[in-house]
View 1 (cartoon, rainbow, N blue to C red):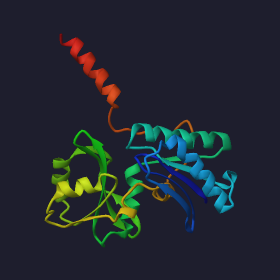
View 2 (view 1 turned 45 degrees about the horizontal axis):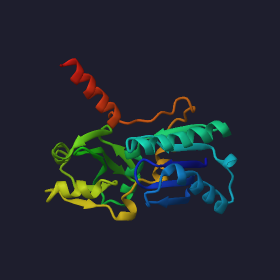
View 3 (view 1 turned 135 degrees about the vertical axis):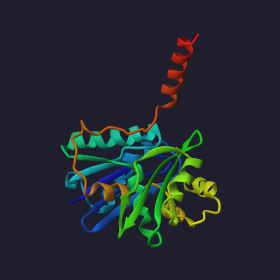
Length: 235
């Protein structure tokens, strides 16, 4: 089965094609350009170099959150638009689960700590343990403060392998972690469409109507609206 994967959940963006034998190609960039400008041209170049057409894809997968609200919407909209036009099934996967596949490079027995900078002194986080080359989830995706995260990871009493665009910040917060913590090398740190393909490989396909973004928390505009309503009601 050939899977086309998209990730645009943060500053970096990537597109990949995988089949049952593994990664065929991946196009990754971390230059900060708007994903609506880059995602489809990246896919077009990749398919041209592979000598494939979109009709030869069996499944379109995308990281549907958590992450940048705008980035997630761009990725999900791109996947849904292509799936609708081509009559292909789609699959939305957790951004954090997708990046956990980078933990295949971790020392044996490590806990994979996926950390995205969620701003407001929080991380989007989930913890996994590698079983062979497959990350096994230890907790749900969550928005969590640094102090609470440190307290939570200590209970596993195992070394950490930290991935994600918030990995360096998370590593600094952990300080001299008593069980040991390793910051993933930069090429393995960021979200990738390869991870999206891997996470989607054993999941049920969805229709375009079922694929929705997963934000974990309200957008800034929604938070500000709620604050204004609260202020008015308490005058």
